[in-house]
Length: 291
Image (tube, rainbow, N blue to C red):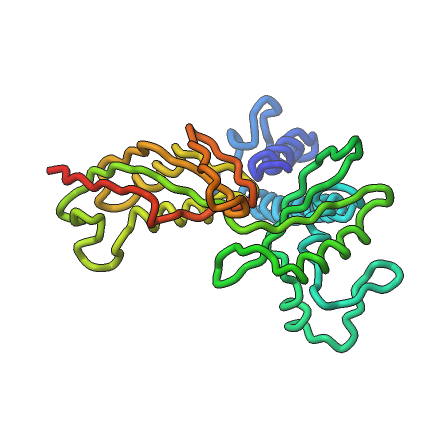
């Protein structure tokens, strides 16, 4: 897309390059528009207005083109974007017609929206016994937290996504409880802001560092990676925190047996469930006053 100045320059160059204009205004053919006309001249103001109108129109066309391109990609059968959109459009408890479209009947927009229980999804390619399959990790949202689907919800989604997918491919649907993060942190703090337990002195937050860690875990892209350095960066932003140091961290899938040992995290951890939560009770936070 052209810049506003490029549009104006193209018009003014054509204008001063016209022999008719040169004769009419008595212009020097070797001079530019800016050399011949003041910024306060009617001609300059006219080109400013006209260039802005063209730039606005081109911007609208550019936005429209991008939207159309994105829509084409999202609706191209078999593309990752298509799989994601299809999964997010699952309506729990609704039937499909012979063409694979939902039969909504007299359902209200609110009822349809409520039936779309998939809050997030991630697709992965895999090979099982020599056959290519697609694994779909799905979650729903309860009280602003990701949680696993109920058995009947997962069964409904599994039947739906396999009916919608390409012939000859199979989708394995899974929805797991969150992975658990435990940390061991030393935090040097400003005693003018925080106390020895890490609480704010003004009483607005009993554990701002923990709040920051929980917020970071929520911000991680679904089925993305936990990064220790990024967690430290978020804790560093907390008012009153002078120096945060991550001594150690470990991740564990809640889907595994209780006796399973957590995996130490050197820096990066890929979750099994696609999301994780902080285990505050089994984490260690040591607060040291920095005076």
